Length: 225
Image (cartoon, rainbow, N blue to C red):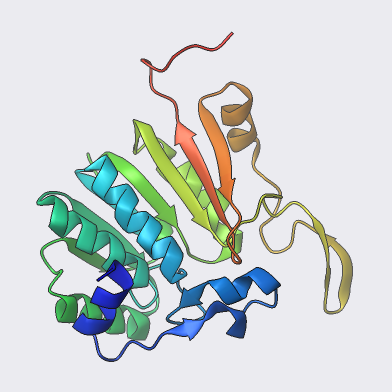
């Protein structure tokens, strides 16, 4: 039984959909999802395996939604026998739905659910080995900057819904033709500098919704000439 099948068995309210119901590209037929707002099941399975591999003490997620990502990562932390996930949702009804799901999954000891605006969340002394940013697109670059210093050296940040162009293409928005960088906004100079000076290394997975990753370099990494 894979992790998606396990989620379905633990929560009978979940229903599996083809990703092609929401994303109009041919490869979307190969992917599945529980809803149009959370991560794809394949992305969840990837994050489950990634958490199992990293064995983190702390993981951070912004944009809990209905706790799809939190369920996959929470299951991985439970199977690791260590680690906690902080996940943040600002809409009260959605947060309450997520709380119910996490309890239904038996993951309340692994997942801390916060109902607040991400900009008001203070990690304190925590250092995260993995961060998943999945709120509104226009806020995620700012969240990257906010939480970068809380990311361990050798850790990873993922931004969901972000394709290889990193949101920097020109789009025709209803009523606003040739709109650049919508809705993401321009990549902030802070992030550009981090990439330029190789403090972070970007990479990308070409899923239907897009998943951009950033590795925070570690002092012991091999130094390429």
